[in-house]
Image (cartoon, rainbow, N blue to C red; front, side, top):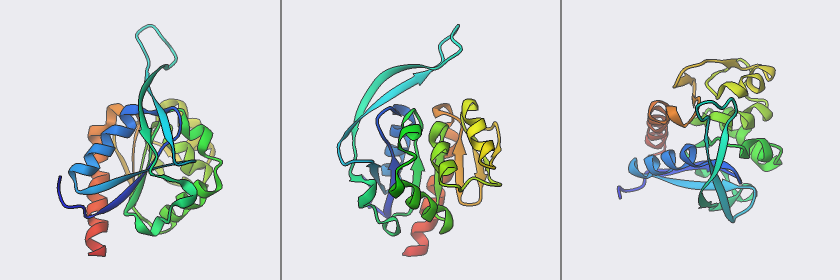
Length: 192
């Protein structure tokens, strides 16, 4: 494993999407950035797999792997981290009211630190009132959540708006995660 150049946060909760979470988790490690998983409590969380099957009009869900949260939201000092990723799945809908998560989200936006969002992850920055005027990709069913909060929906695999990179679903991992990691590396170089 390469020498670590810093740490980045991955936001999860129960029913976080497995591929949305694990792909960036391991890519961070490859880049020498320590992934730190955060959630409402420091405990084991159940991830899920989401897919719209042929002939279905809604997302079908299966249990995925489990993931251990390293820290509770209340234990995070955002200044110690290069950036943050809002993973998808159903978790964002349930955790977006957490006051510690909201204030942390606002801090990363206000300080212009590297931010990534995929799929339903948009529900957290939207709830934190930080998407107004921003161009973002998200899963089509969250377009309303983004636009009602003043954001601009873009149906592309990677949307970069200032310090934020977003993708629609885990199918876009290969498009949006790399640019986010590049931003994290640039942030680490500023701190060196």
